[in-house]
Structure formats: C-alpha cells, structure tokens
Length: 135
Image (cartoon, rainbow, N blue to C red; front, side, top):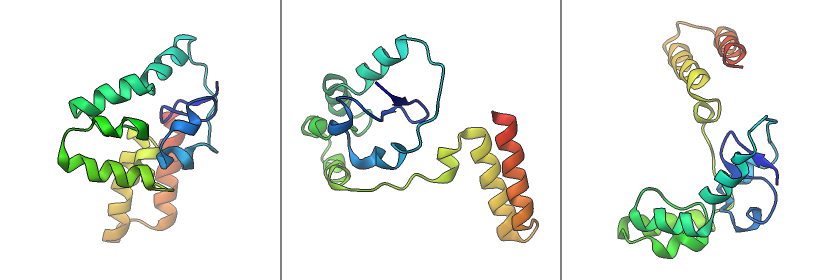
C-alpha cells in the first residue's frame, strides 16, 4: 500500500475508495519516505471505519471516512460533515501544506509583503531558504 505520510492519507489500496474527497488533491503529490514497517499498521488503524466511528462519536474531529458520519452526535457538526462528504475538492492552505517551520515563514513574509516591507522576490527567497533548512 502506498501512503502520503505528510498528510496521513492513503493514496492507493482499499482505503482510497472509502476516503473523503478531502484527500484528492494530495493523491498526485506522494512524497517518498523511509517509514518503519509499523507505519502501515498505524495508518490502517487511523483510517479504519472502527477508529473513525469512535472518534466521530466522541467529537474529537470530523471523520475522513464518510461512512463514519452516522456516529456524529453533535448536531452542529453533522451538517459540515455531510457537506464535506459530498465535496469533490478541498483547498489546503499553503502554510499548512508546507509544515510548521516553512508555513510560519510564509505567513510572516506574506504579512511583510502586504505591509510593503519586502518584495515578492524577497518573500520567495525567504520561503525557499526556510524550505531548504527544513529538509
């Protein structure tokens, strides 16, 4: 089974078809990794219907497996879960996708760009330097 460990979502295998469309944008950007063998077992547990149903029932977070939506007891979360299950696309913001170290630099430099204290080229250079340090 292939996994995109940066977002903990399966990219192929039996779980791919049962996943919410939230992960669709990540399926084509799988990053190679040297994860230990236990990683597959952990991710299988994390994305299992049993685990997703239990976390949905407890209100920890919205399930990523639409079949677990029926376990959501909080009426305020039922509608967003239903809408997410129907969606065909989900935008992940760049600062979240880049990780905390690079995302923080992106946020700070974007603010500096809006304030006029840095150029677009300077912003790009700062983000690239943060990316190279984080690798």
